Length: 176
Image 1 (spheres, rainbow, N blue to C red):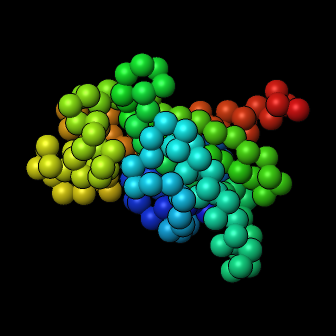
Image 2 (image 1 turned 45 degrees about the vertical axis):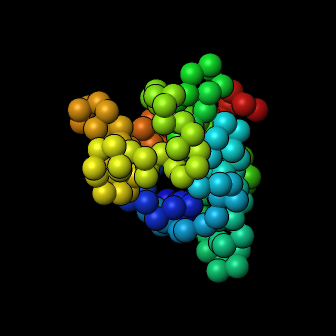
């Protein structure tokens, strides 16, 4: 099964791989850098829109390069206060070759209000790198690994978001 993913981030790719392998055999994921067409730090609706835009741009890439795939997938992390408190979530999009699309989100983790303005001006990963004196946390275990004392990683969040999105594909009859 060929999957084209709108990122080269190894943690996001691994999370997607673990989710798809739960339900499908012979998974091959190719990571491609494509634009999200939202800011470096997506906020609220921009999170899902960025994931949708990545899939749209993946499809253009596949057509241009004559690549046949089974699924186009993307993951976009961002901050939202839609529940009244600031949290970080990952939103994912999965679209099959027939245009059937699904989405899912990860668990959200709280962000202290005192960092929100700085995060909006830069991005969460850079702020967490500064706070935890890490280097490119967003490309490895993620800042969530530090916040949970290694109980949850970026890979876990991404995997869970993709499993949520896959519910629509493994239960297709419910949506028809």
